[in-house]
Image 1 (cartoon, helix red, strand yellow):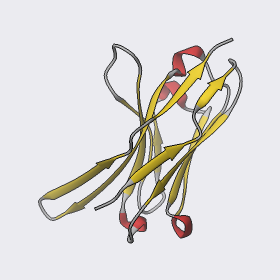
Image 2 (tube, rainbow, N blue to C red; image 1 turned 90 degrees about the vertical axis):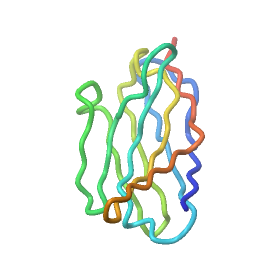
Image 3 (cartoon, one colour; image 1 turned 180 degrees about the vertical axis):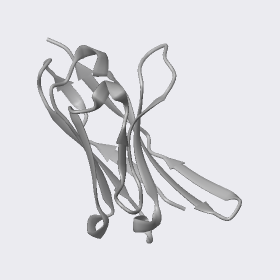
Image 4 (cartoon, rainbow, N blue to C red; image 1 turned 30 degrees about the vertical axis):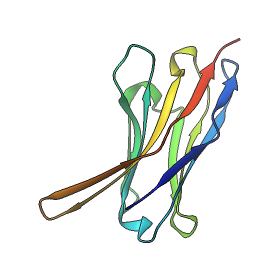
Length: 119
């Protein structure tokens, strides 16, 4: 079982930056693939960025070059650095942890943190 707690959201002007953090409880954080998702009002939840247990990363096209995902296994934390923010980045951002064990896939979600980009 993993519990995830996001922080770092808030209101920022277009062009600004925010860094989201997701702190995970429990041991064995390093074996989980981690991801940041977002959900805007009236839209489906979408993957923003992901980082595997081995450190490989991938990003949604809409955030490539602006967002950076990273992890600190010693602190059981994953980060999302968001630069050059746009109004369309406004959403609730969720942290996700996933691991596969044989046929079983274990997924955990945080409670979400609101990001609002507005002047």
